[in-house]
Length: 259
Image (cartoon, rainbow, N blue to C red; front, side):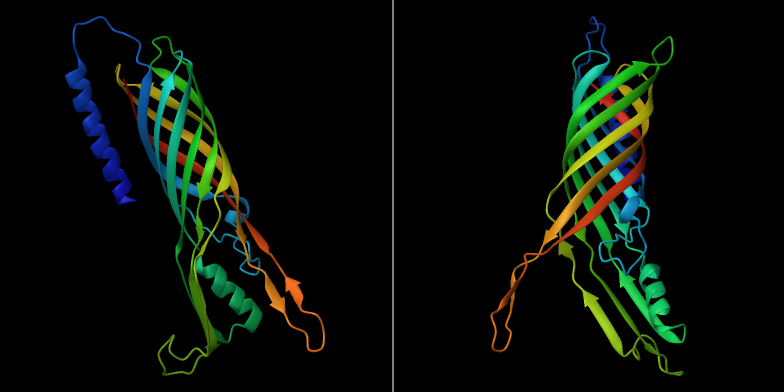
């Protein structure tokens, strides 16, 4: 998270420098283009946040950091188009795994779990709508409707369980160990809606903050498998497919530069 804040501070410093250099007595013209950066926490929703390890398509995802970079063009002061490049990281909850093992094998069983993070990227495009909320048009409302593609990978994890022998270090004495490799998921259609407020600091710089929600359903397809029956015809199993819901409510703040 410190990296995200450092990036935002660096960008704000650059924007103020550019704005100072851009001051001139020439007549002002409409600034059509904009670019921005926002960051903040992401809160998994739906099955992405489901902590039921028995459900093989539950995301077990926890809250994590998100970062968005945007660029766009305003046809009028109120209506424009934009593209968004977004990324976020949500760690899988290891307690979901150990809780499941305790429920299945009893409290007397020792458990251990280690998980990695969902790393999700989005490329979206759509419309942006701005409406002033104050007389001087310093305060404004901003809405966005976007659609595009999402890419992510189901994270790898491992766990172990077994009867704990007093005096022997853990997790060395667990008698059952499971390692699950990460699973790349297919590109998926993603939609997103944003609503937020902005404050025009000066002609070139705005501070912005919004609440956004995105949703996608990413798939993983399995191969065909032949099962040979003695004295019978082989049975074709597959192709199989799993669907993973990836959805998040994000709260973001940052800055936009108009030029």
